[in-house]
Amino acid sequence: MSWLQRRSIPGVAGVILVYLLLLALLIGFALLLVPVIVEQTTTIAAAVPDSYQSQRDWIVGHPNPLIM
Image 1 (cartoon, one colour):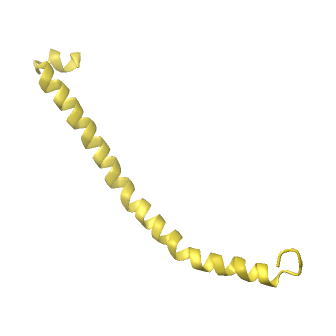
Image 2 (cartoon, rainbow, N blue to C red; image 1 turned 90 degrees about the vertical axis):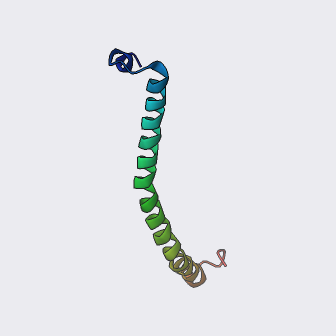
Image 3 (cartoon, rainbow, N blue to C red; image 1 turned 180 degrees about the vertical axis):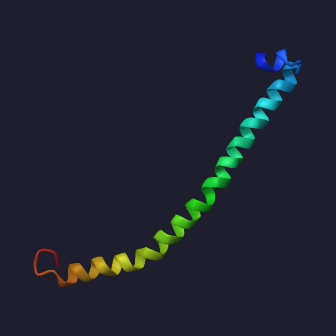
């Protein structure tokens, strides 16, 4: 804040500027993360049925009578 005041930016404008910069950083960070999260969620959702079927086949084919 004092750095901004030394450059003749009023206190209120400096506070608003700092909050706007923080908001811009948060939005930028979210814009970078959202596509990655959506892609990974889609990949996991597509893999769940195969994983479930694989585990079910293993349990059904397992020779231990205590499992079934």
